[in-house]
Amino acid sequence: MNFFLIALCLVAGPILRSAGILPENSHKGINTWILYIAQPAVALLYIPTIRWSSALILPMAMPFLVWAGAWITLKLFARRFAREKRTFAALLLTAGLGNTSFLGFPLTEAYFGDRGLRIAVICDQFSFLVLWTIGVMTALNASHSADSGRREIFRSLLRFPPFLAFIAALVLPRFMSLAPFNPLLTKLAGTLVPLALFSVGLQIRFSGLRDELPSLSLGLVYKLLVAPALVFFAALAFQLKGIIPQAGVFEAAMPPMITSAIIASEYQLNPRISNMMVSLGIVLSIATTGLWSLVLKAVL
Image 1 (spheres, one colour):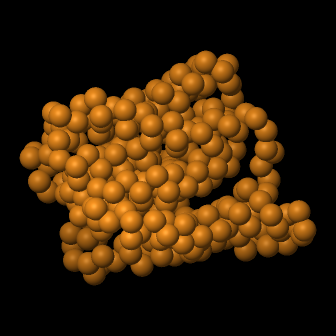
Image 2 (tube, rainbow, N blue to C red; image 1 turned 30 degrees about the vertical axis):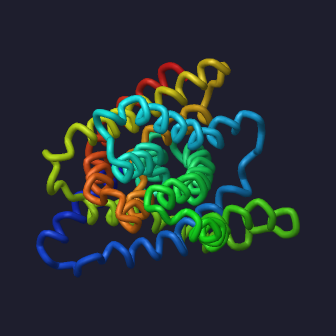
């Protein structure tokens, strides 16, 4: 049933958009609900139930490892695939950050259940921490506006609702029980999966694909195959087993983050390639994440 829901919501977006039923940029209103209501509800519902241990270091470190790997990979191939500074930054923002919530939550829940979703929430919070610090600094530097925007990085992070909810979910249970709010939080959190997938479907576009294919190939091969492999081998090196490393690696296999592509567009960092990284990555990830789930369940 979960996979039917994923397919239905993803397909409904482009169909309704093509039919002209929905207004242009209608996904922005949906994203507002997701960012301000649904994601905070998920954090408040699941974070207090997590048993924190050293085993969670892998999910927390995953976004930093993926970003570092993307930077090294792009540096090695920059002369051929990303000579221009803005193109390099656009590829780094999209290949270095995964769609850990909008697509990551429903896919992780579908493959690894409720326990996997709890780990996905942790991965998502640290992914956004990387985005709003290292990611925004990358965008600012590439657009030659670093000096004027450093303060905005921390202001944006402190105003970001899912991050605030994450902090609240860590602090509030020390002083009060959130259990009375669980029925409401459960209802609100339940809207995340269908709306996130529907929003993703609305934003899928492939215009101009052929011109950017070499750079796209590099970015997507890294994001969908190499990045999760880095986290996978890290789990093997530290002999980690079970749902925590499985979900951590699986979240690393998510396609490029939509929000990072939006930031790349806002700073004029080759918006076409950043948007196509997201669109093509979403489609390809349906197959690659399925393969990764088989590997993870068999090995970890």
